[in-house]
Length: 365
Image (cartoon, rainbow, N blue to C red; front, top):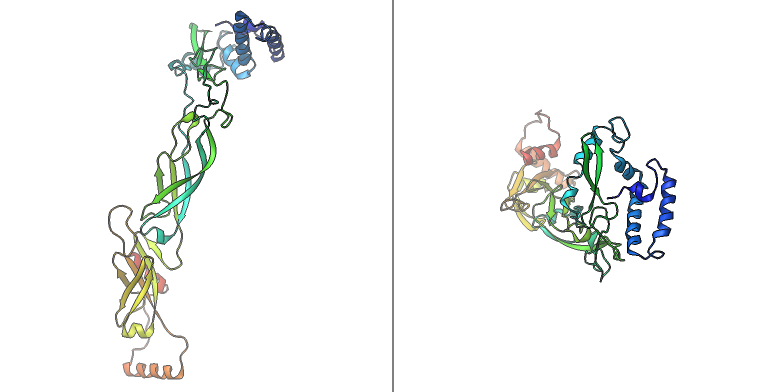
């Protein structure tokens, strides 16, 4: 391949303005509208490619790499530049890179109620993401057109050139600056997606949230993430679950916890009551002599297990409620009861931080 400086007719130490002026002069002379000949057309492509490289400071520096000779000269910036000279183009030699890439993964946080995770639930989630362009269907081209082979690299996606180094002339390869390494050029990009093959849009994703999930659990939905560029495969969608707190029930693993306030008389005599649980009513028998802090367990009325089979339990902590206001008749009856039972005097015992501390110890112990 011809030397870029020779193509533009400038010296190697030419300034950016000198390079620009040389390009404009040659472009006016060789442009197909002015000079339609085949030879002029080929020269025009070479001139354009040479200007693309030399007008970019980084590309020009890479192009000049090794031309000055010597480790201390401008040709080598150090060991990294030498390594790049010898080995930096190994991947480009494999062929042009593909425009098709996998889409990015997406993460969405979904909030569900505690009652929804007992048996699982279904949600239709609105997602703002990238989808396949319906106009070009991922080709990136306006319908009726297709990518054309790059005239500079001839479809290889890379440009090879000889660089003078300490070991002699070395052939190096770098991405083609015209097609950016793709080997083809999209002359007529799709007007809908601007040549990306995908557009931003809002779409609905149906989601089945399994029973037993808890806050922090992430569900993976393969292929439900963003569409990839140029028709590439979709990424994955991840749903991070947050379970809302319930005003009555709380959760410990697969068990549901709640507190039942029981009247003093019911605790003394015993009774049967119905509790409105999250998945229907539960009948609970309160034995006579029930004490505050006791735990009543209803089997298999907790949360369905996420892994495995079966359900957890419903655990009910008892709080016996002592009345604070009594009528004179009620007080007289209680005094009669106290006199007949001859209860022992109050005595000290180990300090406990209230009912809820005792319930917590029993719930979790």
